[in-house]
Amino acid sequence: MITVTDLKKTYEGKVPTPALKGISFEIKDGEFVAVMGRSGSGKSTLLHQLGLLDRPTSGKIILNNSDVLALSDQKRTIFRLKELGYVFQEYALISEFDAWENVYLPSLALKGTPDKKRAQELLELVGLADRLDHYPNELSGGEQQRVAIARALINSPKVLFADEPTANLDSASSQTVLKLFLKLNQEFKQTIVMVTHEPEDKKYVHRVLWLSDGLLEKEEKTGKKY
Ligand SMILES: Nc1ncnc2c1ncn2[C@@H]1O[C@H](COP(=O)(O)OP(=O)(O)OP(=O)(O)O)[C@@H](O)[C@H]1O
Ligand SMILES: [Mg+2]
Image (tube, rainbow, N blue to C red; front, top):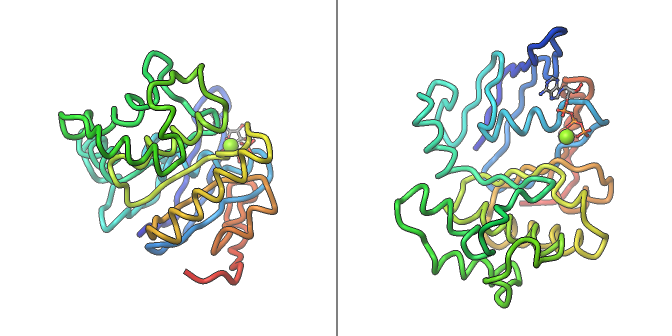
């Protein structure tokens, strides 16, 4: 599903910062993979490159058989909308829109018509059937993150990326979100790549990619089957 070859990212600036120094790995269809490592090791940078939110300095990314960095900007944007879902640590919902609107917006952007029914079904799936007309400031952090997950799923992405999705949540809400990811992976075979700081999250995933100072230090199989 994902093949990354010698991926490098240097942030240009007064002093260039090499954040990824040549990373290669593969992720299979249906895998649930965690990305771990110290603060500053390059986890978010890696996810940004994979999620097509940024462009690497060099290297190759094959997503679902597409050489995504070779696509034109417009084609890459469409690819991102259609094939990738992204969940941010800080939810990133649009405050002027209610939960339902936030979820169906990416389907409107992709197809020109909003998929309101699927948005409703997804909000039911994440346990928020009774919160459709709530605005983000009328939802708890855990509820906002579940809206953000429903939004990430609206266009049936091949891969779901999540960057520390539970970092702002209390332990009960974190469990709810992680169990939701587990369900998406086990029941719907959703491929998921999740950055996390929490060692105990290892119990949910098939494999851990450990980053250290911009390099892939090791790949750890957890023994879970998929
Ligand atoms: N926009 C940027 N411009 C310049 N340097 C950056 C930028 N974003 C990140 N960096 C640097 O790149 C390195 C990797 O950052 P990154 O955000 O990927 O780390 P991380 O592993 O996600 O850390 P954390 O666990 O704290 O979220 C860090 O040294 C950081 O200072
Ligand atoms: Mg980060």
